[in-house]
Length: 244
Image (cartoon, rainbow, N blue to C red; front, side, top):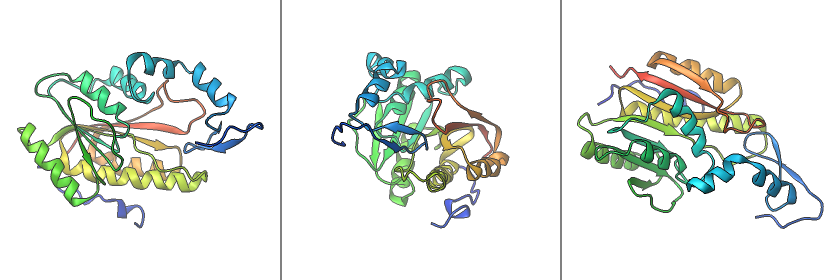
């Protein structure tokens, strides 16, 4: 069992539109402006996006699958016989990638989200808040059944808050989510385990990354090609968890 670190979210923070003739813009969760769903401009962007086309061809649930694929191609942390915990997993594309890349009788993927999504072969879904004690007990029970160490090898978190359109609010919201995910990871990660999570650019994001540096051998900030250029998102890969 991982040693207690005392890290928690409270350490950082207290706890389809109709088609319109005139094309309107709305802010997204990543602070860029994009056209409303259903407008000609939105449809054109989707049709011209190579990752949207590739997602359909390769049967992934979301284009975000290619962000994880690109990062794992470079760093190779999704290994056969690994146990992976995917926090905020809906609609399941990262769980799909993890399952496919680690395909092995001893591999196991646990996906957790408040939103239900259709079942995936080889993925065990838990519906609920990953910060909830009951949900964490379920995670612990599943891990104990499939891992000799009683812990997981990789924790993934591609979760994001519902967009407010206000940059500072959305930055703070995603840091709160990630802080909670880190707290869960520290309870379940193996020694030398890996964590990958998403953040939006901002001062609080940088502060959070600096705060967790002592707990890992190496931390890398990554902007994969599959992440749109006008998005403020980036990904933090934490290698070599020190749970002892």
